[in-house]
Image (cartoon, rainbow, N blue to C red; front, side, top):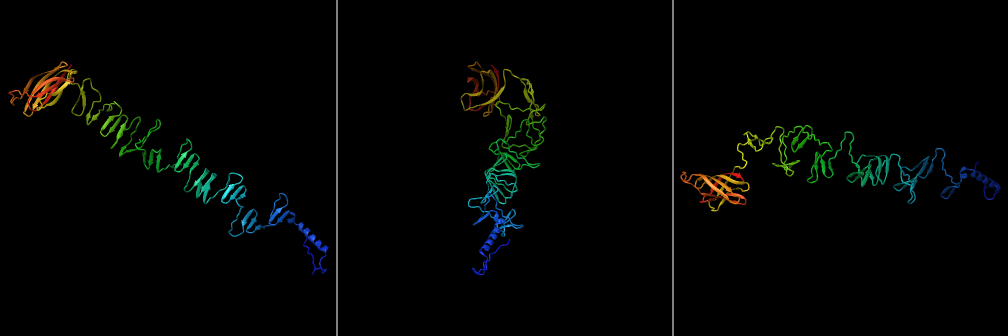
Length: 460
């Protein structure tokens, strides 16, 4: 029905307008049509700047016709899209005060994203972060790719992390059983730390120190602590195997140490300077070889029928018979032989002494033990180089334990240079002193007398 207009006449009360009743009928018809419209029948109230519904729990539905949209100043709602209508303008949702913009349980407050209904915010699709990512305790259950900086301040669990640039971890970072803190990589309790390359790859470390004691740099392995030994030790029945050894310009090739059949080792030059070689019970230092253990013999043993050779002199490889002596054949070979002159109760000893002519005291020429020998026979040569006089005599000496006795006989000398007279300038005597028999001499002129003798003592 069309709108009914009340005729009010040309001027007031001129009788040309509608009657009061007719005007009321038109008014009622207009209100009837208005109240029958769906917009009025929908229980919508518009009071000042509030639009509300009077029906309990009813929605307010704003629905355009056909392809039309809901349009607000600067905002258009098209189906389930809200977009800005101004060119290059932001679409802003601004809560009041400290409130947050909440969308499906996720709150947005300032630059923070929070979970309003749980403690976890799940991002189930790929996430691209172009700037820095600061996370307190995040969990990433799918691959994470960070093209800039990933800053982790607390515990973080990653299923897969791909890093194309440098990584910086502040504090202790745990990855599975590995702990990273500053320049320290450690493992959880009692866990080994394994470095395992893939396929034919290698673990490449330019400078490595193990246990603050062993350092590996380039092709050098060395100890770092002062005076430490360098020990290579195999496990169980294993052995230390080195394919080639260069010992300070000396080369050891094809030598099997500890093998069933050792191979020969050839050394062109093997030099040890300023140090000692310790081989079990033997130490070699400079030109000295000595046994290390107390009271140990120093043994040189040849193999089979071989002999020990010292400066070309070959020693016997076995002991001789009782009382045999050593002799050389003049060609560097020493062997045992039986001497035709061996003594059981006596021996032969030679010696020399100078009896001073300017000393009138009795001087000792020779001595022997009274506990070992009873008597001795002396064959004595006396030389006076000053007067060119010489004498040869025999002297027999014996003792009774408390006194010694001497007898001189069978003398020969050059006398007055022609042998016509006796030249006797040395007086001999004997005594016992401190358990020894002493042969004594006293010069009766001023010349020194050189005495050379052969003594043959006889046992008690």
